[in-house]
Image (cartoon, rainbow, N blue to C red; front, side):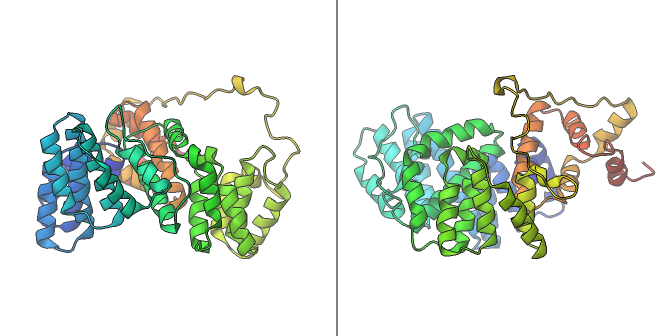
Length: 408
């Protein structure tokens, strides 16, 4: 069900839920998945019914309380977009019953500010309440941009600083949520990067200065470096300042050295490849699998046999960028018997088997690849499975045997 929802196969997810309910009608985790799927399908009333069932079985379930808050808040947003102000206000009141942490309370206050703005009522009190919950930094501006409903959104004066470590942590949480939601809805990677540029580039210097916050720990730095290195955020040029600031305090930290090299590789001059080789050698001696994998993922030349060699000029440097093209992915032709077999393969099982060898760091890239392939096949499950099977070296025949059984 989770895989189907991640791939936006909501009809199939709902069918899986109904089938599972026949065997496990009171299973809390299944009810949670049903509620999440209902929200993804914009069936907010159904999500609320599932949530109430969960709370009867597990009164302290925090996940369902979050789901109830998001369900009512999302429904309120849709009501406001339709200019149905009274139903919107009722939904926000229901959302308030489940809001507990500062992020939820701040988001709710901004939603009410937008509602009052549309009603031509004073909304300053709600902005002040949001500032109380979120601070008056970049996070508040980022969330305001997300919560704006109309063609004439509420605008705030520019942020002067990241007000605290909490401000930075909440901002990173919101960015990750935006990324997950974007890809779950089959959004384009470059459109998302453009959106982040629009929202965050005005605050680039402020975010760079936040790397000097004294409260930042090693764990904070490694988390932020990994986030700022994401392809969707690379235009912000934040990874290098954070890695350098961290290395001033922990100069022998291997993972931070790795992040610095990855960030330098994105610069015009690139990373010092001899440093890359030395770090890889050290990581192998210390069996530091995380650093080894990061280096191998980002520096393809390290995969060559024997000692890696980096040329003085980058490969294909003589090719004009305008002449580069993306090769069309061709779906391999299959005979009727193979196609009939493929139709029998459960899609969720196939995806699970393909992903079993992936590390956690590779999972997001895999999900994005699946979303891209889903778009290419225009919702055709058989063609989608053919593309998935074509990823395998044996053209998928071994996978078919493994899933269906050799006798089949």
